[in-house]
Length: 146
Ligand code: AMP
Image 1: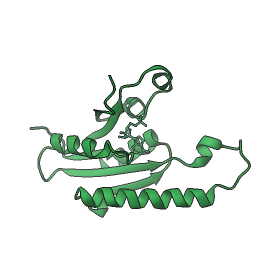
Image 2 (image 1 turned 180 degrees about the vertical axis):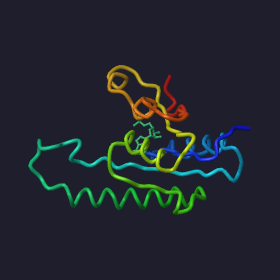
Image 3 (image 1 turned 120 degrees about the vertical axis):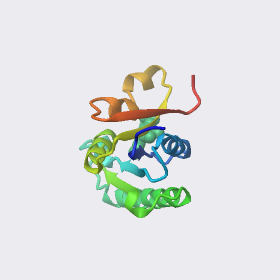
Image 4 (image 1 turned 30 degrees about the vertical axis):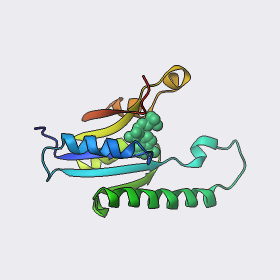
């Protein structure tokens, strides 16, 4: 049996999310271990910066609302109550680390795709989370590639 009593699970709302949550449940110390889920929304301004002179606020609000609804559905169908759901704006690796710190989590669980070529060079959220982690990180293999 593992020692993990407070686990933060990073959820990108893809179809892999169920598997990642199940793996997190599998390594929890017991049924009373706390399981938190986090979804991070990257502001469009991070991607487009000042390159496009456009007001993104309407689109950003829409993205936020849709992600909130999706996370609520995911959490409800997996028995994760409101106090254990976190939805925030920012860079995924930064927010995942800072929430893990805030919560005092002893494990972070992320999905990890086998990457090739350019995607490998560009790195991944799992790499970003692993980098400088102050607690254990479980990278759950997802995506079905070699
Ligand atoms: P990626 O590197 O983007 O393919 O994502 C790999 C894993 O990182 C996902 O399976 C999630 O566990 C986590 N992740 C990626 N993006 C996000 C996000 N926006 N919010 C929370 N977790 C994320």
